[in-house]
Length: 427
Ligand SMILES: *Cc1c(COP(=O)(O)O)cnc(C)c1O
Image (cartoon, rainbow, N blue to C red; front, top):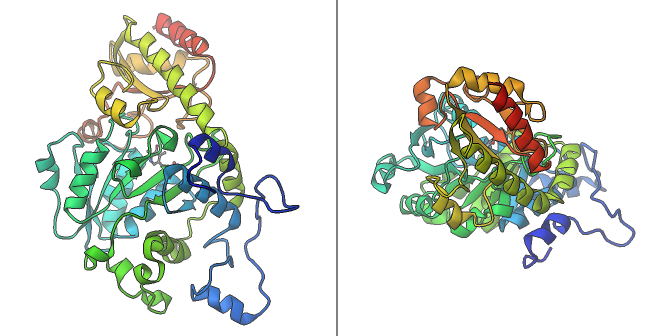
């Protein structure tokens, strides 16, 4: 697919180009394995001497087509799907960090990622220092150590909605010889392409806007191909020194700019196996075909809802980067001039208990764990997704105890506002 097509065209067309007499729609390759004519052909695939499919745990044509579409949308060089956003973030870091290594991460973070990085990966010997994304450059740099291998942050954090200063973070990462990994789940490449601002690797929970219909859990990792692993040879031995589990292949020598994704596929997917099912990849692809239509609607509806809430006497505060008085308004204008996402957060006067009572009175907006799909939904992180966090950890993650996360869907904005109005009137 030509890289000069615009995002709208890529959403619909990228990744799959049928030949003569082939299916118009991307087929679901519902097959665990792939057939060869002789033993030598298969052997060459196992040696990574030839590209080709042999087992769906490593690669599947349906998944590859969808990964290629997301790669085109992000303007990257290579990409892969994973079974979930959690798996994507895990692989993205674990691909370049091993026991004894360290990485730096913004504390404004999705709760699941916070647990993964702060607890589970720690048990594997990989430590993470969380930093305030709004701290000074000097303070953030102080967290770097000789064994630091990456800087990680979310473009718009879930649920605290902090907007990342991508350029500043990229400069900090690069001045320490490490890549910037950005979780771009909330804006999607329709609203922000982090590679254009210096990020090296992008991850997604495709479960959210990309799927868009709350049908399938999934993730993706996309590489810009811009980070020079060879220039930091000692820092990244997994990429620049022989892989004994693959007959001594050196990924950077053999695959050049594709080294990072090749290693994550050939080694991590082979050994850890968090593959996305081809059926889910098919559904994700259907979602991607309308991503460019849905995102502006989500943003437009969210702006109307945020303005409504802001002027309501029972509302204590509203956080939405599209509001002019928002702390992140200018950063959002710079990185996401067409809108950020459909998620807003707010608190009610009277605090936590009032917030919970309000949520129970909503009729159109449903209480679900999910966020960022076509249907308006609502969640109270302190009692749901983030309930395992202490108050201090909640504060560091930018999640107030009274924070209501409101994910504005693509229904009619007036209906959403009417639902909020009746619930606010009842408390
Ligand atoms: C939901 C989410 C994840 C985790 O994704 P799953 O698909 O639920 O595993 C990671 N990062 C962000 C920003 C998310 O919103």
